[in-house]
Image (cartoon, rainbow, N blue to C red):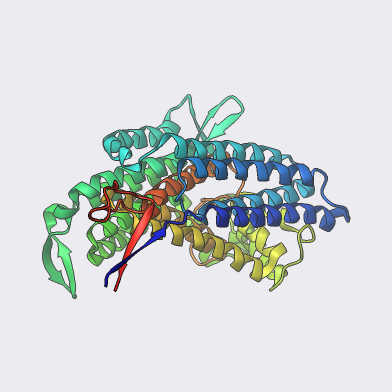
Length: 462
């Protein structure tokens, strides 16, 4: 006899609340321990800091219960933990350097959380974004060109990627990561059938047709343009890598990755021979302990070497929060905050941080797998890959696996534009994950007379 068993879908909001309490507790404890390490007393304002973080997390949690009850229960707690640990380390560096970056970072954290909350509330269905595919393309072009305007753009540390109005500065290329992800997802979900057509075989790879190489060549030319005009190696690599990743997700052809790597290698070779700042990055990577390279004023390896010494001093378990000397590394609270964390938390703490980023990427990719529409799959996968690639590039540069690029670690590093962008990414992933985890509507059992429902999952057993 057939028996129909109904299982109520679980939103897991209670699990999210418990994880949020843990995240806020770890961040607050870290903030307080900074004071103990520096002068033997708990950091002043630790309760206010913990309360502020708890309020921000609680607001988003409440909005998710209201607007997106089936959203992923892990993404928000991990983002809060990373943001909180970054605030604690920036506070530690403020005490050492006599600066006040921590209060500014907390303000940007509030703005970022508000933006993520607004995304969840206003964007009821992520598929609406597909209507604005070419609007997103135009917005991306505007955002990338803004720093080139003579009255608005600013050159900081050799890269022209900032805009400034009075004392305020912003990096519009960070927001362009999101608009480009929307454009790539919207365009490739339409063009993937054409781009999936097979051409010739070469070395075991099924290459695409020659006429279909246009999009990847345009993306490559655009990334080279960013490198030439803005002198920004990291953003150039990030944008091109994002396109290749979404292209692979759309077509599932390894040949596109091979073509992307070949174009990247060709662009890197040409850039090395044409641009002095690229040569300086490469020489600082290959010969960091050479006295001439180490003492060079512009593009030298002093920052990289000091970061490596700090990581070595941290060892396995670290010097302890507030007991190291990360402040002697230039830009310790932004470009090299990973080295600062590694010195005071050790290799074990660094692995834990990287594991948190791995969780964010894994949950993003799981969302891409679970969502039922092609646009959502490409958008969630592209956003998750953006976080993964940025973490790899930053960690690889600090650990001397690859040359330094100038990107910052998501959520950890000081910088309002980066923090705002990454919180918006979390908001988008939460919205898409709600659609992915929400049970599909099921037909009512014959003869029941009841309507279809999306609140239960029907399992038939015999």
